[in-house]
Length: 247
Ligand code: NDP
Image 1 (cartoon, rainbow, N blue to C red):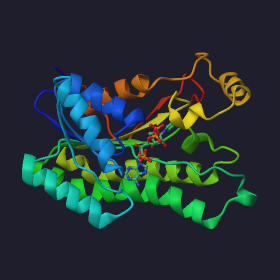
Image 2 (image 1 turned 90 degrees about the vertical axis):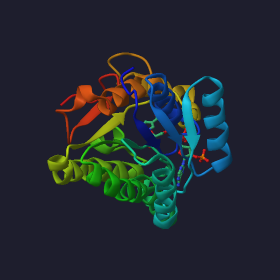
Image 3 (image 1 turned 120 degrees about the vertical axis):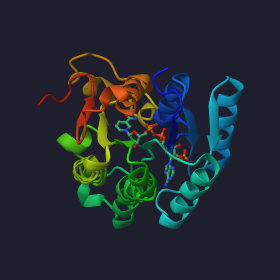
């Protein structure tokens, strides 16, 4: 049990990659706090986990709203006393070519992906700084490293997450808080199921490992970053992209 006796708060974890991360952590003994903008869905996921014999509870918030996030974190701390692991996973896309991109689509993506990561990190960091330990894991994207036509808002938000990760890693290192990012490539989820077969085949031409990733591929790297095995790793961005980007 690599996460025995730990408490993990995972944003956007009612479904998709966040849910897989939560389940992977729970299998390793963590108590997982399922959090989502859709509180009902988060509660359902937490209940399913409890039925499977995992330690789980739900604590929902909209990551774009700092007061809502603060309240949610305070409730967790009042009930459980600490948060050992934070995974900033909640994320959205609103793709369009830059020339057609609406200001509101720019703002919405930055608000969830970047400001949301700021909000949750800010609320959780106070408790971690006091405890003088913690693991923060930010879900970025390979797009934040390489850019992508039609995803200027998403790429900028995820590049921001990577830079935020490095800055927090430097600020929090003296208190034994590790801050790292995971940058997935193309992962089989609802987000990518919408792509046409044509687009998927084009993408795969640039993936040396020749397949789309699975949520578990991302969750396994998060597990390493959440565990003691990564105690000497901070400020890093680990790409889980089948080799799309090598540097
Ligand atoms: P999904 O859309 O499947 O899941 C995202 C979750 O975040 C949903 O449960 C969603 O809730 C929730 N969410 C959305 N907005 C908010 C908000 N404001 N506050 C709290 N929760 C919110 O996405 P994925 O699982 O595919 O992606 C997870 C993360 O991985 C994202 O950060 C994404 O950018 C990143 N990623 C994904 C890749 C992929 O190929 N799938 C590739 C690279 C990175 P609801 O369902 O109610 O909208």
